[in-house]
Length: 126
Image 1 (spheres, helix red, strand yellow):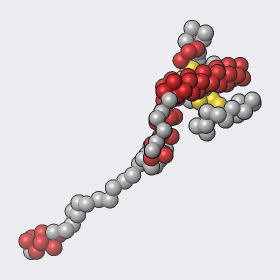
Image 2 (tube, rainbow, N blue to C red):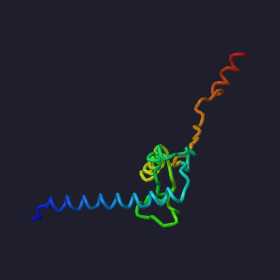
Image 3 (cartoon, rainbow, N blue to C red):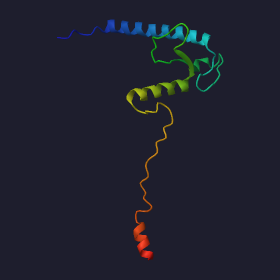
Image 4 (cartoon, one colour):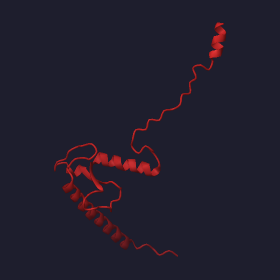
């Protein structure tokens, strides 16, 4: 028989995980803002102290625990570009959007056959 869930202990574990995530995020975010200019690495939008909260730190390998001190796994992205990066990654993982965010020009083969009744047309004129 399964042991009942201790909701008090579960609440403590969740609260601790949330605290650790906030600490981890503030730590690498502060480092990234010191290392890199306050500019979105994708669209080039510039940020000031007034709107700096809209500049996020993106983990290039999508692993939030991979935080090398040199910042090689980070790039500063605006909210919009950050969302786009994660959307592309999600679609890639699911197998959707095989072009991974690139324009995919697939040309369809032609189905119209303009000369299919050419013989009939020639026979009529003769």
